[in-house]
Length: 238
Image 1 (cartoon, rainbow, N blue to C red):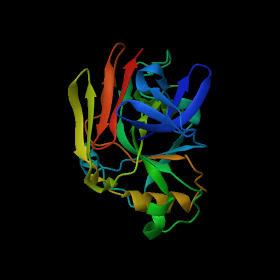
Image 2 (image 1 turned 180 degrees about the horizontal axis):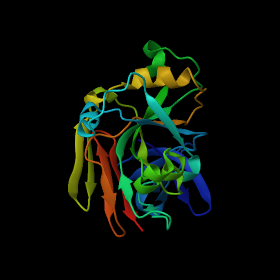
Image 3 (image 1 turned 120 degrees about the horizontal axis):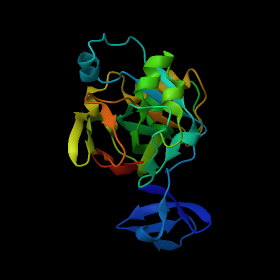
Image 4 (image 1 turned 90 degrees about the vertical axis):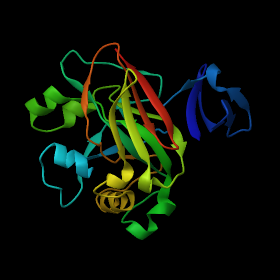
């Protein structure tokens, strides 16, 4: 697992295995001695809306003909263990557990058949949303963009994303459970579509959409997004 961490005043990347991080320089440190950050520092975070068949059915909506995309600012990113902060402007903040794709090399007009060579790996993501502001504004930028509204982690892992179990829990209770095989638009289709619109840079993140079961978060809650093979992204709500 590729991780990014803070130790004292320095920020480094490394490989995590059995609670030991080996840095790119060959040094080692223990996981409990460092603060895990979002595993990448992207130029942009591209999110996909309405991308699970059962979620569309839950909302009574037709399946989209093309991916619905929007952006979150990199300033919204936090790592596992960091706090999600409820803004004073919102009274209805929701979780949305998702699979995130992390781009490995510069990608422009990449065909679906070539996508695997452009991906660094995958991570858990939580598309935290101020739902009341989303309804009020009629578009999604403010509701999706508050600081701490994009938890990502714990690290980046190269896996086959085609059929992974995804689960979101709040205070230990399961709120979302699905498999990535229920995606309307697969990872190769998404990367082809998005790279035809904007150039994707190394470290850029694509959040692939959330399954059914979205719901509210409240101060003191602990929310976990777990995806098969990718670990657990855990954050407390403040």
